[in-house]
Image (cartoon, rainbow, N blue to C red; front, side, top):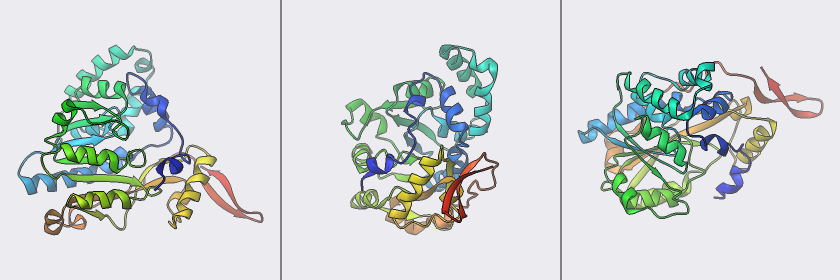
Amino acid sequence: MDFPRINRSKAVFDDIYASDDPRAYFTVLGDLDYMIPDVAEPVVRQILAANASATGVKPTVLDIGCSYGINAAVHRFPLTFGGLRHRYARREMRAISSDTLVRLDRSFYASWPDVGLARFIGLDVSAPAISYATGVGLLEQGIVADLEKETLSTDSAHIIRPTDVIMSTGCIGYVTEKTFSKILDATEKRPWIISFVLRMFPFDSLAATLAKRGLVTERLTGATFIQRRFRDAEEFESCLATLAALGVDTTGLESEGLFHADLLLSRPEMDARATPLENIVTVASGRGRPIGPRYVHIGGNAGLQVALEP
């Protein structure tokens, strides 16, 4: 599957990962009602609990595309993406240096009870994001690497080795089976893999790669997970065209102006047979959350037209 071609239909946010702190990340994505960390967290918690029950140990989670450690933050502490966004939007917080913010955030996170079910390590191409996430204590360790293009270093392989669960909430489409194969080559066990994948990115090739390694993939039926609003009309129409070309029905989902992701869980067949995904996960998709204006199609004499619906 030509993921680079599909990605051309999406907005590019590379700049927000170049900062030494997450203020730009929360500002830009928050303005688009980015919510996947919040809507995914209850499901991640259920799957981590099932993994711990099956293995008898507190799992080590590798978050691929972890950015500033937000998945770890919302899982480990009674916090939300939305709440953190408001924290960084305060005038006082916007005026301070990155060094000061890191120091304050280290104390901020340390002041909350850790209610997480796992320890977190992270992988991202952004060195500033990894530095922040480890510096404030969200990640125990972090790896800066582009495994689509690079080999996994010996030191990085050592960090990854004890991984019990791999998770991603939006990186598939940017990373492929190349990245996952290198990671799985370094793990000492066959981990569970939690993937929230935008519906415009087929999972077939990755599922086939995982199957060769003894991992079966289940897709949660009957629910999708909202990632964010479309940034503009161009992104909206491009996404719908991509999904139409794949034969994916967008009615009531992307057609309503929102990116939707599927949940897939890959793990050893014995684990899947013992506790099917449908028996682990109950969900609330985020549809009831208040959101800003969305791009939608409106029917008229000239056919479907794009409109911004409040």
